[in-house]
Length: 291
Image (cartoon, rainbow, N blue to C red):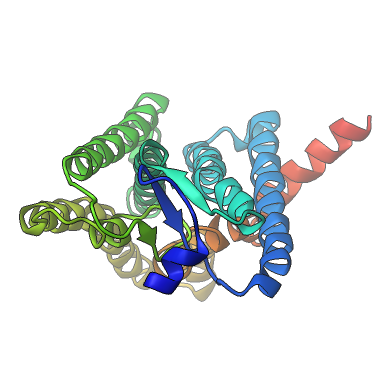
């Protein structure tokens, strides 16, 4: 730790983000890789949003949630990646105390909003497949807007509580964060305060916030599977399951991979390559741009 402290200079009010690798020869190649990934994420998600808003046939609940998911993915990566790119080319690799808390707040807010939007999309598929006669009522524009507002509200309240707890802690020893952004656990490890009560609140509240959308998705797809298995024809089963393929792929990526950068980059490709409606919308957007 002493050697690490000597390698990075910063004021005591700052934190040091060690990043992905401390090897100086890897900094520029990593910068190039993550810059490309970030640009692909921005371009891909902006195209998804523009395609959905420009094609009236995509003005449905599923694509309403998808456009908001793409917007959250843009915000989500922008909270983390630009600072990481700056640090890859910087010798100090510092982030201010306030900047660290702000990054932590918005990272959690956008990440949790993503998970609640995925749960909302699962509910949309559940109603469409299991109760199609009531779809227009259950997934009305008003209900979709309420789901979006609820997703944002719960996520931001969760972030606010977490950051308020963090702001009460004292940091009087090492300020070196062994991560590439200000995540809760790496920062908690640096505190010289008694963090046992904070850890308990964080674990309990986080479990509730994270488990709720995950259980909602799980319940929705169990209902969908039981409903589809009762469909007599193989073609009918395949048609019902095919409407869920893109969403399921994103869910698996979100809960199973490096979601901070990889998932937001891949989401536009999954929805555009596996979805004929999105392909049509993107072609229509392309034709508008060229005309």
